[in-house]
Every structure is written in structure tokens, then in C-alpha cells.
Image: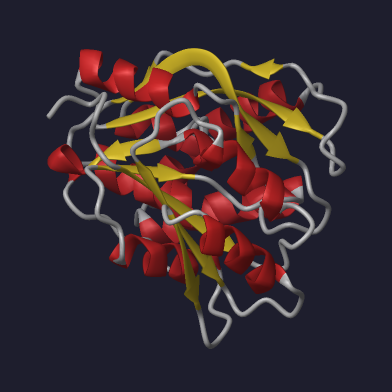
Amino acid sequence: MSSSTELVSIITPAYKAAGYIGKTIESVITQTYPNWEMLITDDCSPDNTRDVIGRYAASESRIKLIAQQVNQGPAMARNASLASASGRYIAFLDSDDWWLPEKLAHQLDFMGRTNAPLSYTQFRRVDQNGDNEGRVIVVPDSLTYHQLLGNTAIATSTAILDRTQTGDVRMIKTYYDDFVLWLSVLRRGYTALALHEDLMRYRVVQGSVSRGKVNSAKKVWETYRQIEGFGPLRASFYFSQYTFNAIKKYSSF
């Protein structure tokens, strides 16, 4: 079976996302690539996120609601979706982001042509209301393990993994669970490849887990020291690269 017909499992964690997740789900329903399943894990939201997801799931059999009984954070919510995933390809889509209609079709075609184990794309940021699109975020052609350490260029909602190469994957419960997952894959000698097309919209939500540049920098440092086990000198080397690339990425909206 070619990549143009393989099942894609879309992994979406949701928490207090009632105001956003409808647009996220609709961007999947309108994909030109039809062979997908969307596994949305509601992480015990206090609002009506679960009801919104349930309404879509009731009318679209490819959407599956997984209900956490206790709030455990995005990594464990992603793992709950991953545990139920049946697809060769694993695509990640956060509950406040959305895809352009040809995202899956173009990216899977690219992965089939390049045999990429992990791929990512360009994207644009939008404000909290989903308006005011920013510039295209340019990404490097490829990323090895060592290159990714200094450049967190893989936006979660652009990433697709090929499980025939990577095997099953799971998140660990850490602040940058996505970054740590990409590192764990590339550490094995794989190279992630970029499709230079703008195919995702990243909603900048105030108070979301990934917001706050100073805190984000601290968590990247902790990843080097605690997850990767680097000493201070090696961590400082990669942190300087990360800082340079982060400034370049966020220098303008």
C-alpha cells in the first residue's frame, strides 16, 4: 500500500478547548486526503470541550473521543490517543491549531517520495481569535538529532511520523514532550525532512502551556540537563544555538 492510501492517525489532546476545537476538527474533516482517524483525548476539561467533541464524533465515524477520568496533562492525553492509533502514519494536531485542506495529501506524498521517518512543514501564527495571520515561519531543509538540539523548529501540529520506520512511540511526561519525542527518534540516526509548504495555522493562545519565552527557555535547558543528560558545557553549547534560532523565529509576528 502506498503512502497515498495509508491510514493516518491524528493525535489531538484537548483541555478547555471548547472555543477552538471545532475549527480544529473541521480542518481535518475538510482534508483532501480521506483515509484518516482522529483520536481526540479530552483531559478532563472543566468546560464543555467533551460535548463539542462528542457532537462531531456522533456524526463522523472517523473521529473518536477518548475521555480521561483525571487530568494528567498533554503528554498523557497524547499517549491515550497513541494507544488507540491504528495508522501507519501518526500526525499531531493540537486542539487550538488547524490545517489547510491539502496538508495531509501533500505531506504524505512528500514522505512517500523521500522515505522520511519524520517530516514537518512551514506554518503561520495567528492571534487568539484566529485572525491576523503572521509571516510564514521558514524551517530548515532537514534536522538531525544534533541540529534539532539547537533549533526547536518542528512545530507539533506540522509533524508526521512513519511508524514502519520509527516503531510505536509514546510521550514522556515532561514540559516539552513533543520536542523530547522528536529527539528520541532522531537520536537513533534518523533525519527529519521539511516540506517547504505553509500548511498549518498556529493559534497563539494566552496562558497556553507553550507560551512564555523565558519559561520556555528554562524548560529547554532542563531538557538538555535532565532528559538528554548533558553536562553544563554541552548544554550551554546547544542552548546558545537554541537562543539564536528562537530570537530569529520570534523577531516578528
